[in-house]
Amino acid sequence: MVMMKDIAADGNSGYHSTILPLSALRLLVPPLRLLSAAIWKTVQRRDVADYGILEEFVTMVTDLVPELLTRRQKAQLTLGLRARLTLNTCQLGAPCESENVQPHLDRMQELIQAWLSQANGGNPEMSSSEFIDLVQNLLKNPDEKEQFFQKVFEEEFGSRYDEAIQALMWLFLTRLEKLLPVQTFHQVASMFGQGSCTLEECVQSVSTESVVTPVSWCDEIRAVLQFHKDPNQLDQN
Image 1 (cartoon, one colour):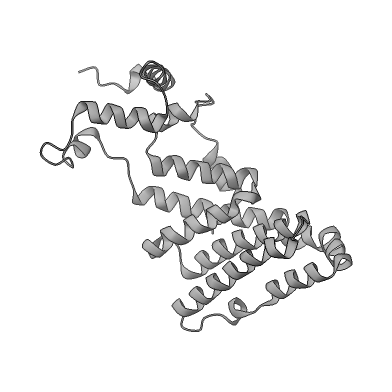
Image 2 (cartoon, helix red, strand yellow; image 1 turned 30 degrees about the vertical axis):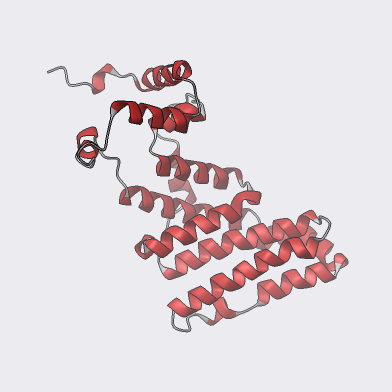
C-alpha cells in the first residue's frame, strides 16, 4: 500500500524550485506527462471542482490499460473522486441543487454497474446504494444536510478520505509514467515515415502548441535551457 509519508518524501526530493510558465513546460515535458503533473497538482490542492475531469481520465486510461490498477483500486479511485465531487456540489447549495447533483449520481451508477459487470457480481458493498440514498436524503432535508456537513462530513469524507484519494492517484500516475517512458531523439526520428517530417512543420507544431510568437518561442527555449543547464550532465568526450 502506498503511504502518504512515502509520497511526500518522493514528491519533494531532487526537484528544481524554479517556476516555469506553461508555454515553457509544453516544450520541456511530453503532453501526457504534463497532463499527469496537472492532475497530481489538482489532487494535492484538493481542487474538488475538477474531480469529474480526473475521474473521466482515470476511467478512460484504465479501460484501455486495465493492468494499471486492480479492479478494486480503479473502483475506489473513480467512485471516490466522483463521490467527493458530488458532496462538494451538494454542500454548495446552489440554485437547482438537485439538477446539479443528479448527473453525478447517475455517473456513479454507471461506474458501479461497469465494476459489477467486470467483477461478475463482485463485492456486495459496491452494489449498495447507501451513498446515493444519503445524498438524495440530504437534498430533501435541509436540516439533516446541515447536520451532516457540520458533524459527519469531516469524519467520513475529510482529510483521511482525501489522503486515500491522493495515494491511489499517486499509484495510478506513477504506473502510467512507467508505461510511457520518454523516447530519445533518435528513437523518435525512426518513427517518422519517409518524407513525413519537415523542420518547418515541426517548428510550426511546437509554436502552435505553445501559443507563442516565434520570438517568444525562442525565449521559452532559452528559459528551458537555463532551467536545465548542468554541464556535469554532458559527456566531455
